[in-house]
Image (cartoon, rainbow, N blue to C red; front, side, top):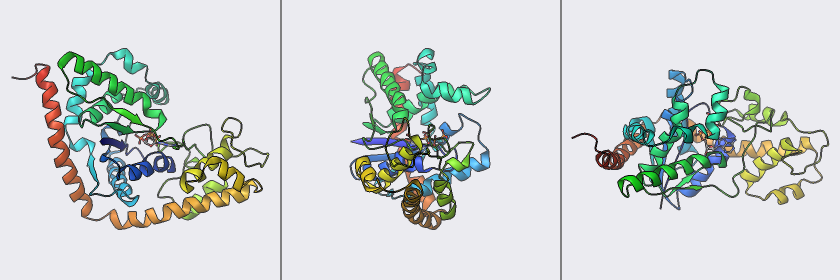
Length: 325
Ligand code: AQP
């Protein structure tokens, strides 16, 4: 069985990206044939500074490896180095009703945040469908927030198969049962995001120990000082419980029971210890990897292998649609 997944180099990676995506990828590498990419074409759906973007692309690859993704178990590549992603996207865009794209929740959210946004923000889910369908991925590991996009990819595949014959495999989302959504530490009703305007609410994977501790100690919580899990009425403390649960492997009930007599200050310190314990070894490996020539070798191999697979799939649809000679 094959999976395909990727992250956008749209900023420094966050603890949310680690818990919701990277940690899962590391687990899946022993169960599936894994294609892991850096979604740089997706990142440009909103404005990016070119130098920062290039730095973030390289940094993302080094984080994948430092977090435990094994170069021999995964095919790792950069999306824009494979021209067939954009080529396929154009074919699929022409086969996707405009109305279907306007209904995507992420488009509705992001189009409100950016003024004069580019058309790519609307067509982004079709590019994502291309990413998935080019490789006949069986599963797409993703957070709940992206489920709608995988369903769109499936709808597109079904439509194309019906019209042009069986070309695409129908993908399914792979949503971890224990995969909590990590929220912003300053506004725990909002998802923790790379592109957040307030860095105090976000733990970046490369934050220093001191900064990580400060951010967690000043996380917004309610005033009743009781460790209880209730995301609706106690989003701040519930978010810290989610972080602890995801990193320790314990269940929410176990965590609540273990810390029932602790106050918020003590619990925050314990959460900070665990986050630091998780991230410092990743940061050490990251420093060893980031300037190693090994990175280029891994990316060259990933590019060459995926070009071959994607080219065949693209040519198949192009041919069936009657394009070219
Ligand atoms: N806060 C989060 N909690 C759990 N999972 C999360 N993911 C992102 N934030 C959280 C998961 O990480 C992957 C990231 O996908 P992406 O890089 O393509 O973009 P995104 O979901 O839009 O992530 P960000 O960090 O919020 O980026 P920006 O700010 O650029 O929009 C996905 O699997 C997602 O579920």
